[in-house]
Image 1 (spheres, protein in one colour):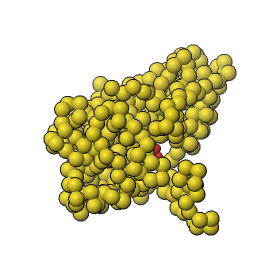
Image 2: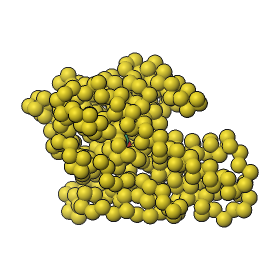
Image 3: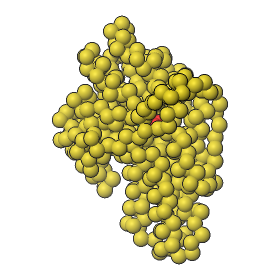
Image 4: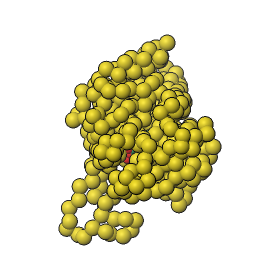
Length: 354
Ligand code: MRU
């Protein structure tokens, strides 16, 4: 059972687990100001594409609570300012923009006549996004179930579990559901330099769930495939272009190439909110570059000499040709992804419209 919640809305406050402090300390932080939520996304107190999107939606709810506007147009203006601040927090995960757009679209659709109603619509939509995320994650796990052999050695990158989502997780959720349904899975967790989401967060989650796992350094994946034999790789995604090119945590691209070389299936797991059909391919995905200190320091110790430049790409793009399938809550897309993803997105939209 998951004993924690990455994101919670309680008494008109947003409560986030401080992911920077794990696994050493479990600290929850309360937010009443959307500016602080944008900072929390930037500083990775909250991280992982679906979690960022949901946090931003609740950030908009806070903006409504903070607003002193007495008329609807002024409150809408405050809301759109908040949307701008939240949008500027991190560029790669499309779920951030998707969630903000979805809340704003709902407001336009419902046409509230007073500020109280507008506030209620925004808060309700943020809750709906959170609830749907949990449902989608579980469905991703069920959809993937037939693809997981028993027993299975599964290689995973970064953290895609309950911490990176509202609950359950995408790629890690697949491993969790396979385990819960009795398959003998063993997860090999890339530590995921430089922020160590695999070592710190995924291992913390799997420990609590009693799921067998082993942490490896990112560079070990090739040798591990040769030596131990890996049945499949499964990773999450921050943005999937119309042709299937997938942005995910830095190192995913290398892992996909190594998997191809060893004939290991390489799966991407993500909700349809991560699919961005507005861009034809991965060339159009904005890739975040983060502070050099994430690389030059390990904890408080400097490990790169002064004067040596570093380049800190937070994400990379895995070309679609390395991806065996993309597993979503509405089904599994196989190559050619232009067609299969478009069909799944149509199905997802029809589901929403129903
Ligand atoms: O920089 P992060 O930790 O936010 O990056 C997270 C990832 O790359 C995850 O794999 C992705 O967001 C999917 S989380 C379900």
